[in-house]
Image (tube, rainbow, N blue to C red):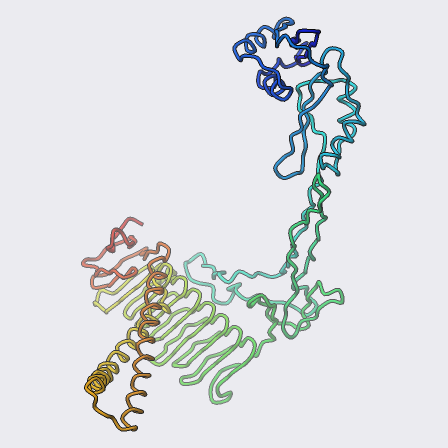
Length: 529
């Protein structure tokens, strides 16, 4: 039993009696004592109270509070309501000697008068009045918290990872026939399952106000052709054999176009789905596909454009005119005299005299694994076995800057230069006309019309230059914020090779083995692997 105190009101005198705790009960807290005396308008100096409280830890104490006659004090309590109005606690004080005790019913009615209309803990209140544990805060009202719902979510039954990479054989070569990049599906396969949202339940605070749960996110299954939606709109099923992929939140199944070769027998190909070519692609032909392009043979000086990946099992000799463009990744056994652009990564066993750009990284670290001649750019890292050549072929590798951003900056700078030259021819005429008007010279209607036209052009080009400079500034910030990148060389890097990281570069002066190049303190540095 906790220690507690009780007022003693006699005729011509008032005092305070302090009772020690029993068993494991807590002793009186002087703060509780001060709060009560203040609430009942009794005065007593603090040192006297502290001495009495300390003494009451072991035996009963009594201190005088005054010589006036006071009426008896009823049993009372102090109420504390939490800031969120979800909990209320009461701390009870004993009645004075001869004073009346409260009842549970009186307590409950008083809580309602104080605005607590919901969640009153009747059992806890009745429990206090049976035991009467004073100076102990008890929970007398508890609001009902809202039950939060669950967002809807979609479970895809196929890989949605666009960064899947081909595996290397034990001898270091790339397995171009089993790349595991495409998601094959068969008719009847379940492609996606929608797990609907679960709405929550509202709660209620102590005042009886409703507390609404957070809104839950709804989802719907988005899909293209060759797919069936179940009657309850929660399941997508393939209607044909093909390849499945997720494009901007929609599930697509493409039934493949399969040809032996792309040559005079087929002409150029432009197809909505995936294209598989079991043989070769001849020079000057074009293959366009909204999905992936897979070539099991070789590609000569042709142009391949894919909305997905481009895979060339036996490589490509572009003859200086071959072009590969992929919204996904490019994987080829070798690339020679090719212009290749991938939004994803580029993987090959060798790149020779080609211009290659990748939105993520370039990996040329297979069994042969060399980059010789040309220019290879990647927003991320470049991994290669041999870089450059003993013959000194001009070889440039560049990382740390998105090639598309850099190309856009160059385009804007060129446009600014052209607009500036135009302004240099327009502005002297406008200045001259302004001076003539200031001197009172009258101009013909044709001259005025010409000047107005030139003034509009001047404003248009001035605004265009300002907008271009702002875009360049934003693009340069994006390029500077690129994540840390490097060029990793597992074999040799030969003299004359140019390494560019962001806006700094270096030319390798001597043959070096097994190293990496990083940007450090504004320079390109060679570091251990």
